[in-house]
Every structure is written in structure tokens, then in C-alpha cells.
Image (cartoon, rainbow, N blue to C red; front, side):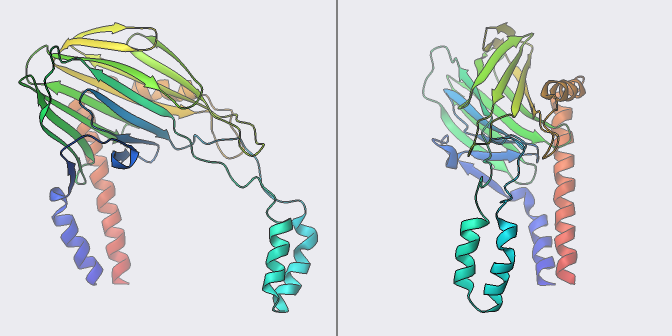
Length: 306
């Protein structure tokens, strides 16, 4: 019963719960996390440049395999006999020698980073800086002022629309300018077309298991300003607002099947985003997030009453 009371109090004050800082993150542990169970990101909140590190839930090293030892069955009865005889250490040694031969498991991989570089045209040191993550609506916001212009950047991972959305705005018309690129620690090929950057990222082998997973990220920019496509980056200038849509997928279908097509998955997601304004996407995100929050609170409250 006490837990239910505490949860009620937590829900009532959720609007006040924010993580906030007065300077950008300098490394991964300081960045602010967002995610929708499929896509995750760490947001650094920089001013000269912004980095949004991406993860996709099915992007792992290696490829489908099993780590069952072919030697285990022959020693199973021996292990059982030793345990029943109270000789646990001897059983432990046999298990280590014959049951766990490797590979021992694949590792989760970083997909890459969306990087934004800003042009302030005679930049002064930004003032009134603040970055925050609101636990009430899962919106990650960075605000500051440079050269008398107020900048605001909002990032969220929408469960409702399966995308990460970045919205930028300034309070002086036509003064927003930035370059968008993509970088990965892994082998990646990039190209730009129609204001969309596509990055294809290859995974790596591990413990003798060949790398056979491929991830694709698609990053689209929408703005009323000028947009120029480069070979591997997109430049925006003379803008007041801009919205960036990030989607990603891999060829993973299940633990035995990696014949999926990440391009088809991403194009379907991008198509579903068309026609929705930034405000609609934000509101859909908040509604889905808060509904999930309420379900978790209700479940925990019911468990406390048992």
C-alpha cells in the first residue's frame, strides 16, 4: 500500500522532474538519453556543434549462431553425480571446461552519430545556456543565446511514429544556419539526395562469428530556409526553423533470419511521417509516452496492493 501512495505522489509531481545542466556534455556519460524501445540516442547539447549518438535495437556484432557446446551432453551425468555427492567445485571445473566453449555472445553496436555544425556569422560566446530532459514528456531541450539571437533545439524519440525528431528554431527570422553530417565508428557508406542523408553501416565479426548485419539510417531535413545537398552532408541557411527526421533499421528479422530489407522498413516509416507537422509529431509522442507512463504506474500500484 505504501508503494502505491508513493507512486501516486510521483505521478502528481512528474511535471517538475527534469534533469538540467548549464553546459554541454563533454563525453557520453554526460549526454542525455532518449529512446522509444527501437531507437535510442544520447544528446550532447553542444553550441558550436551538436552530436546525437544513435543506437538501433537489432544492431549487434556477428550473425545468427548458437553457443551450445557439443561436449556438454557427454559430461552431463558426471556433473550431476558430482553435485549430488557434494563435490560442487569439481562439477564447476568440468562445466567450465566442457560446457562454455564459446562464442560467449555478441555485443550491442553503436550505429553512428548525427552531427550538426552551426554558423553564427560572427559568433560570440553563447550565454544563458541550459539543456534539460523532462521526465514528464521525454523532451530533450537545449536553449542559449548567441549574438543576441535565442536558439532552441528539441529532440525526442517518438514511439508513436518510430522516429527520432530534432526541431531547431531561432527568434530572429532567417538567422539559423547549420551543416548536417553523419559519422560512425564502423564501416559506413553515405550519400545525399533530395535533402535526405542515407548511411549504410556494416557490423563486425566477433569470436569467429562473421558480421552479417547491415544497418541503414535515413536523415531528412525540412525547412523553409535554403537547403543545399553535398555529397555526404546537407547545409541549411537563412532559416528560422528546421526539423530533422531520423529513422533506422537493419536486415534483422529474428534470431535465425537476417534476410530483412532495412531500406524498405525505413521508407515505410518515412512515408508515414509525411503530412505530419512538427507539432503533430511532438503531441503524438507526448500522448504515447504519457500513456505508457500511466500503464507502468498502474501496474506497479496493483502489484503493491497484492
